[in-house]
Amino acid sequence: MPRPFQCGGIAIARVGLLHYSPKPPWTAVQLINAFESLGATVDYLIWDYVEVGIGGECSVRHRRRCMEAYPAILLRSIGRVYTPEQLAYREATLSMLEDRGVTVVNPVKASFTARNKLYSLYLLARCGLPVPETVVTENVAAALRRAREWGRIVIKPIVGSLGLGSFLADNVDMAYYIFNLLAKLNQPLYIQRYVEKRYNSDIRVFVVDGVAVAAARRLGSSWKTNVAQGARTEPLSVDGEYSELAVKAVECLGLLYAGVDIAEDSKNGYVIFEVNASPLWRGLQRATGVNPAVHIAAAVLRRLKR
Image 1 (tube, rainbow, N blue to C red):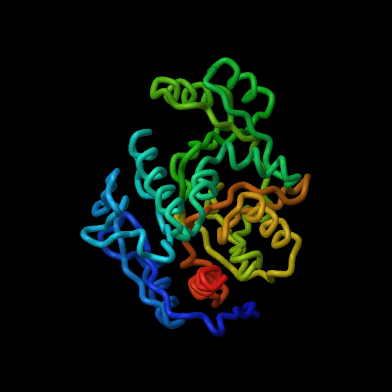
Image 2: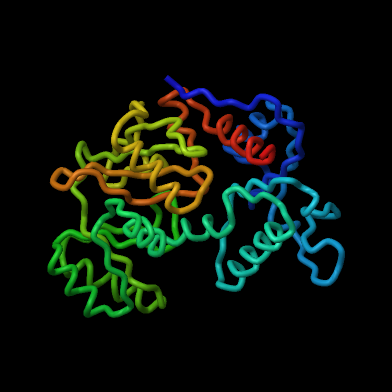
């Protein structure tokens, strides 16, 4: 059964929802409806109309509205970022808002940490959580040594989503070709030992404010188990060990809410693949009947009340 949320006595607030899409996508619509059902007003903001100025009374504006007037900005997407300069600009913009007292959800540092698969995996391991064996290098020869040692490997982008840009290499020749292609593009080589997933599936646990509110098994039609790559979902109890791991992972990274991807290794038990700070949830909601947007909106408003 869905876990209940509480939101009694919260004053009406105006919230900004920041995305890159010109029109609110499905998850944004769910959030807007959830906030409005709790008495808050939501303005949909897009990155193209954000402007930063130094030296004036207001540092960050969206069109003519000062974004510092919002008590909270819900960052639904950092957006498509093509250059380091663009990433630095967006991180600085959000940091300025936090510095001016705006509650940014998820918090800026935590959002950008979760986006970086390498650093977030390091932090999860440091928190004592199980993660896949992983090596990252820019040296093709070193990467090939690891491919020979492990046999089957997965090669991923350090920053990515929806399972796009990930490759399964079954042999050294395939790995060699992919490594050289990425090296020519000046991309680091992010390599993980292939995890033999039980039932060829993984588990998505949705955590909000320290509580696992929904969980679903994602059964892949290929080795990828992302819903965006054709996986089907079925509901799971939120009372399993995987939910405990997910809550600890979200806490470890300092996020208010996240979707945590966990696989059950047939030999070594559960491993955490990723903590997504801007998760999608259409498949999970369809499978479980739980709408995470309601829990997110309530958690944001509770935080403002505090």
